[in-house]
Image (cartoon, rainbow, N blue to C red; front, side, top):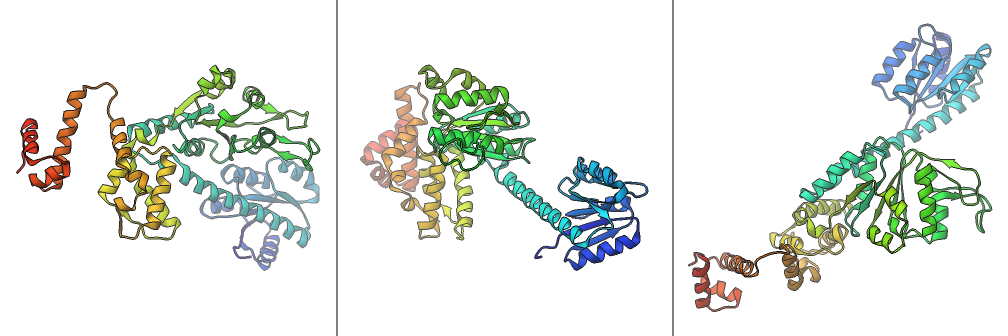
Amino acid sequence: MSERSHILVIDDEKNYLLVLQTLLEDAGYAVTAVNDPETALAFLEESEVDVVVTDMKMPKITGQGVLQRVKKSWPHIQVLIMTAFGSIESAVEVMKFGAFDYITKPFSNDELLLSVRNAAELARAHRQYRILQAAMEDRYGVHKIVGRSRAIHDVLSMVDRAAPSRATVLITGESGTGKELVARAIHYTSPRKDKPFVSVDCMALNPGVLESELFGHEKGSFTGAVAMRRGRFEQADGGTLFLDEVGELTLDLQVKLLRVLQERRFERVGGTVPLEVDIRIVAATNKDLTGLVKLGQFRDDLFYRLNVVHIPMPPLRERREDVPVLVTHFVEKAATENNMPPKSFTPEALNYLTGYEWPGNIRQLENVVESCLVLGSGAAIGVDDLPPDIRDEEAQFKSAVDLLPVELDLADTLEKIEAALIRRALARAKLKQVDAAKYLGISKSLLQYKLGKYGITGH
């Protein structure tokens, strides 16, 4: 085997210990043999072990005692109990405490090796799952939500407070604002992080398929149902079910979802036996559910059930100070995924990115950054490398205007904007008034008048 499983054997009879060690080592396992259970438990504190094979009757600590200690501290380790014929009843009893199997003495070599192999494969699967869970937690933890704006700080604060509870969460916001990322952050910082995170896009499936996808179906419940199938609710048992675009649910499905939220039970399509689940619901939508409730297109009782904790996601245009940070993050990500060296954006290009409206929000920004990195020919990405719609001056001007407060003194605001443009032109012209006037499209004498009006010093 390419990666040898580590087997810890515990038996106070040294002859059995030697036989077991030789047998398992010959089968290709890494084996540690210990004749004292207390020493063996201390060994587990320091070592990575996949399977424990332990005798039932031992002084100081019995095999059942070893099993209970192992399952409490290292639940991923599989435990096999060895017992004499007279102790089979007690061996069967320990199966209730989580033993993988029990082997009777004198044992058959083939029987023992088969049981150890199955236990080692299960332990390996558990280890891979733990590695995957750690990777997912690292990828989707709260610290992976990028931003330093007040708006995103408020989102992270709500995630921190909501995650430890089992309260239902409703995440609202435009498409591309990162709703699923927040849903995953809630899961992977919650007590349910070691259980499944199951995602369903309610908009991607037609209502008939979606019902089977959510609740599962029994064999023969409809044409094509050739076998029983577990739905997403069952798959998410113990963990989190993320219902993306929940505003797309039909009224019939809304009734069934409401029942699950109320009773934590449901039936598969075509079934009659109620199934109970322990799940946390996180829902997301880019629609105005309160408006849909008024129109009779979304049940008000379901809305109130979903809207226990409400996390509104701000659009990117309302957190523009996060754009440079996000650009840096996406450059590093795209460079790694495309096996390319990272590039920087020039200050002018960053200004354009920051001033753009971003109707597609963060998802659109990520795509633009990756496109610029792949297609850009220079060492740095400049304004000319940006997509035409982002370089469009009218769009940039509209974005700048959108940043201004709705209530303002028009004359005063226009004068401030004019003064700022004059200062920028002077800086670009290195304080040469002739060149600054050309940039602004006015005469030098008019520029000098405005310099005096606004008290701007220029040469």
